[in-house]
Amino acid sequence: MTQRERGFTLIEVMLAVVLLTIGAMALVGSSALVTRMIGKGKESTLAVQVATARFEQLRTIAASTATPCSAGGFASGSASPNSAGVSESWVVGPAPATGTGRVVTVIVTYRNNRGTVADTLTTTFLCK
Image (cartoon, rainbow, N blue to C red; front, top):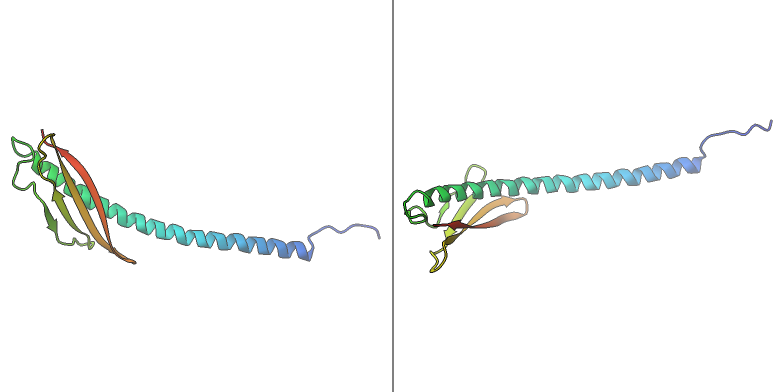
């Protein structure tokens, strides 16, 4: 019989299994990295939300008087950790000799699996 048989050889099957295993291992490694990145993003988002809320509170206080940025509550301070364990402090810069802006810096501190992290956000409030 001269009929030629068709199919895969044992070498071809073994090579396909090795390549599939390498590809699967690469996917597992990248999924772990993605999971860590999502966790870091969640922590950073929470810190930015806390800082944004503080900026808005200070902006409301700054605009509450006839002369902007002169209210008594528009000053540096700090807040105890909230339910998520995020603490904050803020520094209101001095009134400039010239110009109309005051620099406000909010420092948000929180814990992650590597220790304590402090994110600093700064903005300028226009006081005219």
